Picture 1 (cartoon, rainbow, N blue to C red):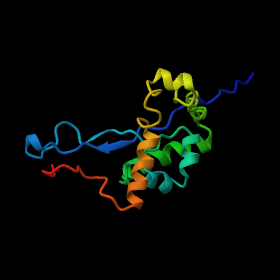
Picture 2 (cartoon, one colour):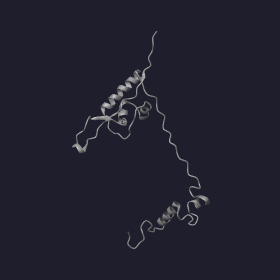
Picture 3 (cartoon, rainbow, N blue to C red):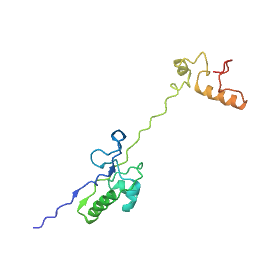
Picture 4 (tube, helix red, strand yellow):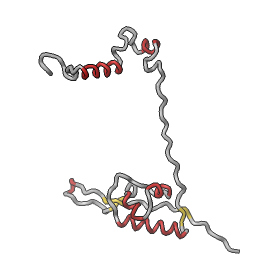
Length: 158
């Protein structure tokens, strides 16, 4: 009776980045030279032969802000990918994209587009003079007329 063992799920190795030099201690590096980073750079992922989207499907974290390509990270990724290709380990399940919830547009009453909304916002007596729509239309009209609308029109000029 032979039993086939299922390969274990193994996440990719953590990316390593160099610790920044501390100016307060004379530029020397305290502790070890490497620390765990946020993700692999795009150059490291391409050096292995993957695209960014393929890497993310395999569970590899990619940090688009990093520019450096370290040989130690490329080597660690190649070893892990070799194990995945040979079937020794399985990559983790691909994560689904995060859904972004967009807020609905505020109602007409809230935007003071109805008489009740204008009353609620205190705009009944002033009409549209206090709204941002009036302000920007007034600025545009003054720009067309080439009036000095951006400066204070006082005598001191402050």
